[in-house]
Each structure stands twice: as structure tokens, then as C-alpha cells.
Image (cartoon, rainbow, N blue to C red; front, side):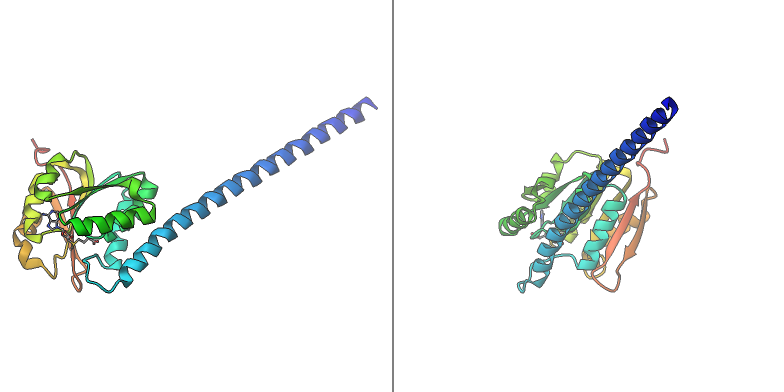
Length: 231
Ligand SMILES: C[S@@+](CC[C@H](N)C(=O)[O-])C[C@H]1O[C@@H](n2cnc3c(N)ncnc32)[C@H](O)[C@@H]1O
């Protein structure tokens, strides 16, 4: 009789334990689902704004969607924490970066000389809900970059192409080894950046490839090591 009672108690305990586990699993699954759908919604919001920007008729400069997707993939796969952009325009490429930075926990510092385009970018960042990820610095980036602190994971050059070599000279020391320097328009504006292209293809501490040659073009440069690391 006593043995039966004990068995009954053990069985009841096991039943209660499995019920509790089932409830916690269901709760955990629900939390993951809620998180996933919140994440998908936030991403869809950014994509929606990008779609609108690509539909606009007036000619504001921006990366192509294919180049934009590449920026996002690079930033997300390398877990970028600090991206520096030169040339914000109305914020398209910044939004592509933000798709990655939302998940990497990173931040973007972007630079724009033109008041009007900077104001469009600010509005787009706000509308997308990513303004907390971005610092927009207004003014001539040749001067304003002197305030940037490293380490930089990705440096994206997309402003005055003849100024790329100056940006590289000023910012390369802040790019971490293993970091990337991306220069846009290396196909359609190659003539304006001959000195930059020469620099990134002859420096032994850098490894460069040219992508999307059929289109605007993008030079992708890996900083392999610091200039003085061999000493
Ligand atoms: C090609 S657009 C940038 C496009 C943007 N990256 C995108 O894909 O959405 C170049 C931008 O660089 C800005 N720019 C040009 N010279 C600059 C400078 N010295 N300092 C900061 N911004 C500059 C221009 O005003 C312009 O908005």
C-alpha cells in the first residue's frame, strides 16, 4: 500500500515537471517568435524606405541596390562595430549599412558637406527608426575626419573622388588590421581616382580587388596589417 502511494507521488511529480517544462518551452518559443517578427518588421521598415528612395524621380546620388546589399553583407558578416562613411547624400548607403549595424550592435559615422542633402538624410534616418545608430557630421570631410577615433571596421569612400587619396592617408591608420576600405565608382569615375587606385594596389599592407566593373564599380581593400607591423 505504502509502495503504491510512493509510486503515485513520483508519477505525479514527473507529470508536473513535464507540464512545467512544456509551458517554459512554449513561452521561450513565443519570445523567440516575437523577437523574430519584431526584427523582420524593423528590417521591412528600412527596406520600405529604401524602396521609396529608389523610386524617387529626382537625381539624388546613391549606390545601386546591388552595391547596397553588398555593403550590408560585408558589414554584417564581419560584425562591424564602427563604420565611417564619407558622402552621405540622402542616406541610402547609410541605410544599407544600418540593416547590418542593427544586428552587429555597431554605429555609423557619416559625413556630408551639403546642407540640403544632409537634411534629407536626417529625415530618412528618423523615418526609418535608425537615427540612434548614426552620427551625421556636416561640413567638409577633409577637415571633419580629423575628429574620428579608431578602430574603424569599414571605411566607405563615396564623396569627392579626387579627394579619396587624402581620405585614405588620413584614415588608414585608424582602420583596424582586418578592416575594409571600400571606394565607390572605381569604374565610372576611375579617372578621378588614379592616385587612390595606385595607392591601394601598390601598398604591400593592402589587398585590393575591383568589383562590379560592369556598373559603377567598387574597390574592396583589405588592410592586412599596420604599416609598421613588420618592424
Ligand atoms: C555620390 S554621393 C553619396 C551617395 C551615398 N553614399 C549613397 O549611396 O546614398 C556623394 C556625396 O558626397 C558629398 N560630398 C562631396 N564632397 C564632400 C566633402 N568634401 N565632404 C563631405 N561630403 C562631400 C556630396 O555632397 C554628395 O552628397
